[in-house]
Structures are given as structure tokens and as C-alpha cells.
Image (cartoon, rainbow, N blue to C red; front, top):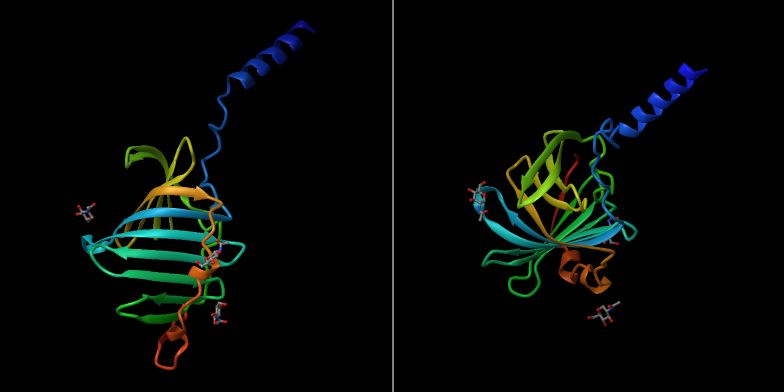
Length: 191
Ligand SMILES: *[C@@H]1O[C@H](CO)[C@@H](O)[C@H](O)[C@H]1NC(C)=O
Ligand SMILES: *[C@@H]1O[C@H](CO)[C@@H](O)[C@H](O)[C@H]1NC(C)=O
Ligand SMILES: *[C@@H]1O[C@H](CO)[C@@H](O)[C@H](O)[C@H]1NC(C)=O
């Protein structure tokens, strides 16, 4: 009877000593339904740009407004039906329409990513994952906000602000009329 109780007690102590979460591998937090992020991007070849990213899952839009360094302001409006409009307003007014097979990124697009451990980047201690040799994703260990992601092609993105719940005014996502003219270049991507 006593040894039984001792056994139970030692088991209990063992359980209590077990630090939480040592057995489970960290997984990336899914993207919020809606957010706005200001991004600093270093493109391959070293060119720089700032991007306003407006992700809106319920509306089915993913909008990037790129300010190229000392260059154009480029709108990239992606719809979940696979259509993406790339356009500039004013001079020069350009538009390119592309059709992709997949829509905007799923909130859990990082599911199945391989955990690589922790690393300090941009001054933040981060959990790091890699998915299909395509993306390396850095998430702040404490706040669990994304800090940085790198693509296989050398483009490196650094998150400057991250506002959960912010929504882009409807009037900014409507592509201009010249996107719908006959002359507009349309490209279709099968994969
Ligand atoms: C941008 O990336 C390139 C290539 O990785 C690097 O050599 C360069 O220093 C970076 N520039 C800035 C401003 O971060
Ligand atoms: C996808 O939705 C946008 C916005 O409503 C629309 O302009 C575009 O034509 C649609 N694309 C397709 C392939 O239906
Ligand atoms: C969106 O922008 C338009 C034009 O600037 C403005 O009239 C409208 O009030 C804005 N809507 C919201 C919800 O902020």
C-alpha cells in the first residue's frame, strides 16, 4: 500500500517536473484573417522596396502596394479566383493581368513546414521553419509575430509593422478601367 502510494507520488513529481512543450515541435502561427503589414524587402540583385501588405481572407484578397526605391508605386491586387492585377496609377499608367491556378495564400500555408530551431534575426529571437525549399519563415518566439521570410530566389522580406484586423478600403482594390481594355496584356499560368 505504501509503496503504491510512493509510486504514485514519484509519478506525480515526474509529471510536474516535466517542462511544458518539450516534446512538441513548435508550429508556425496561422496568418490572422485580416492584417496589414509594412514590409522592407531586399530583392534578389540587391534592389530594395517597401511594401504595404493587406491580407484579407474573408474578402479573398491579398494586396501588395510596392514602392520601388526611387521608382514606381506598383499595385499588386490578388483575388482568390486566381486573377492578379499589377498596375500603376498616373504616369506611366500600366496594367498587367495574370491568371494563376491557385488563389491567395491560405492562412495555414505553412502547415507541414520543417522546424529548423531558433535563430536571432533582425534582433529578435525566432523560431525558424522551411517549406519545400521555397520559403524560410522566422517567427518571434515571444510575440509569435512574423519577423522575416526569405524565398528561394533570394528575396528577403522583413516585417516592420504588423496590425492584426486592419482592412484596406474597398476603393483601393478596384483595378483601374485600363486593366479591362483589349490592349491589356494578359498572361495565363498553368502551374
Ligand atoms: C540586400 O541583399 C544583398 C544580397 O543578399 C546584400 O548583399 C545586401 O547587403 C542587402 N542590402 C541591404 C540594404 O540589406
Ligand atoms: C476574379 O475576381 C475579380 C474581382 O471580382 C474579377 O475582376 C476577375 O475578373 C475574376 N476572375 C475570374 C477568372 O473570374
Ligand atoms: C473609402 O474611401 C473612400 C474614398 O476615399 C471614402 O469616401 C470612404 O468613406 C472610405 N470608406 C471607409 C470605410 O473608410
